[in-house]
Amino acid sequence: MTDSQAQKINKKEVTKFLKSNFVASLSTMGNIKPTCSPIVYVIDNRLNFYFVTNTNTYKAKNILNNPNVSMSVWQFSQMSIQMDGIATEITDDATKEWVIEEFGEAATKDPNFWAPIFRIKRSDYVVFKVEPTWLRALDLSHNTVRSKQSPYTSIIE
Image: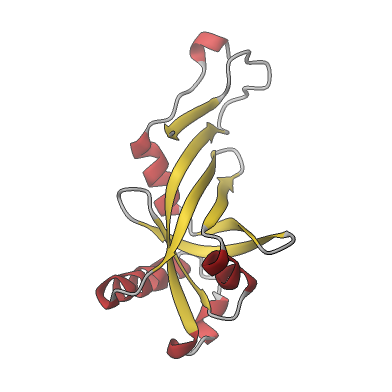
């Protein structure tokens, strides 16, 4: 592939990719060190991510102290998404119900996957929204190793 053939990805393709997946790596910052955790997520059409976690997890405690997070979602030979964002706790019951409903759909996309969140009592979880402040995509379906141009496409800057 030459530089002029470098594959650029649009927001519609990114949205489709993210909706077809459901697991991301979420990085948060504690008082002294960062923590990275796998999460099951759902997204809306504005590319806001939502996830549910136990109120006592490192990620929940870290976010409540520092809402700046980083996330990545990737699938071999398809696409890689990297992003930074601001996480906020969802307190609106209607939004929580939407997230829980969508979460159930997302977590059953793979018949061999069983999300740990299903073990949490309803009173022991928190729902977070992550609004991206920066998001870029990398097309992994093409070999871009020798490309002189950046193979990344900025979706949100």
